[in-house]
Image (cartoon, rainbow, N blue to C red; front, side):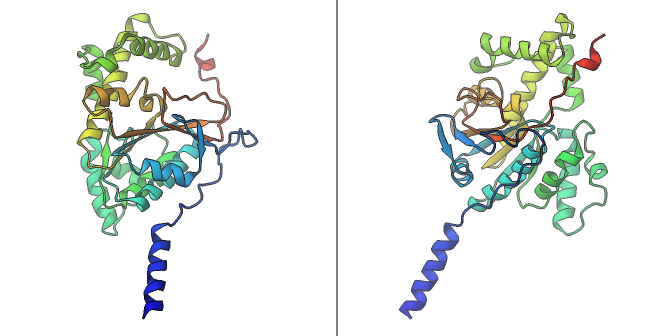
Length: 294
C-alpha cells in the first residue's frame, strides 16, 4: 500500500512539474544565423531565460500584453504556442485581439459557440467578418485555436465609425502618463515616419488622437476582461513607454501587468519598452515607402 501511495505521489509531482513544449522552429527566412535568434531576455535584470521560465513568470501576471510585428509568421506561431502553454499553467480568463473590432463581437461569440459545439463554420473569414487588412494566412490558426477554448475571445480595437469621429473631433485624453509631452512627441514622430513623411502636418494631431484612443480602448478592454487576460497587439501598442501600459497606469491599473515584445533579431528593445523580449527570425527588408515616392 505504501509503495502504491509513493508511486501516486511521484506521478502527481511529475504532472505538476511538466515542462513546456518546445517552441516552434523559425519560419521567417532572415536572421537564422544571428547570435540572438531564439534568445529570451528579462529586460529588468538582463537575465537570459528559458521558454519555460518565461511562461512561469508571465503566468503570474493578471494581464499579459504581447507585442508583435504583424507580417512576421514566427510571431503568430509563438503567440499560439504561448496561448497553449499559459493555459497549461493556470486557467486562462480571456484573450483579446487588436485585430477584432467591437462590431464583430457578436459574430465571434456565435462562431465560438458553434465551434465548441462541434460545428465550426466552413468559411471562418466570412462568419467572423474578418477584416481584410489582417492577413488570415497569418492569423487563421491562432484565431481558430482561440475559438475552441472555454474562455472568451474579445475585441480590443475601435470600430471604423469611432475612428472617423475621433479623427474629425479629437476627444480629450485623461491621465498623466499617456499625455506626457515626451510620449506624444515620440508618437507624432513615429506617425510621420510610418507615413513616409508624406502626411500633411495638419493631420498629425488627428492621427495621434486615433493612435492613443486605440491604446486607451485596448487598456479599457483589458480591465473589463476576465482575468488572467492576454492581449495580442502590434509592437507600438504594446510598448510600456508609448502604448497600452501607460493607459493602464492612467486608469489605475499600473500593477499586475507584464509586457512581452516579440522582436526580429537585430532590433533594439530595452527595459523602458517591455519586461521581456523574445528574438525571432526576420522577414526580408522591404521599402514600403518606395512605391509612394515620385
